[in-house]
Image (cartoon, rainbow, N blue to C red; front, side):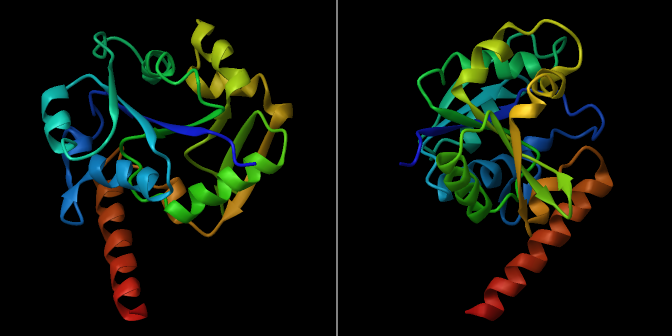
Amino acid sequence: MTKSVGGLVLAAGMSARMKKFKPLLPLGGKVMIQQTVESLLQAEIKDIVVVLGKNAAQIKEALAGYDICYATNADYETTDMLKSIQIGLALCREKEALFVLPADMPLVRAETLKAMVKRFSEKEISVLYPTYQGKRGHPPLIAKKCFAMIEGYRADGGLRAVLAEIESEADEIETSDIGCVLDADYEQDYVRLQEVLQLRQRQESNDE
């Protein structure tokens, strides 16, 4: 039986390395966070929480047409991504598992997410990672039994450090989806996202 899976989109950061606010950057006729949320919705992940911080009103405006919920990291200027995850988890405790997806990873394919849910529903896994050419990417799919550990974690190292403690209970699923390893930390990353999306759109047009 398919497990009840939600999505947690992290959009509270400062975009300090990019020097432009990543969630609202144009991408494929939309803005980046719209693409990110749509990848989850297209995978039939219906319970989605977006964690807001900087430019919260503008993000809400961009996502006005989507059926999603919001949480707010009021201390976004001084806290890290793990804090946003902990805040968002408070609205997701009823789910059996949760995708955790940064807002600047907009090109994860819906097919990848669907394959992950299927694998997760078939096996007893604490964390499932997508991989591309052997490299782990995003989003991890995290089981409910890990939520309390994540919410209570107070040491350094972020989510990566938390999940490292249960590495023996993790699994991976290899994909052909380069979107799992493409983010937008720097300007050249943003350019690469645009190139990959344009290539996808051309391929889809040719397939039609």
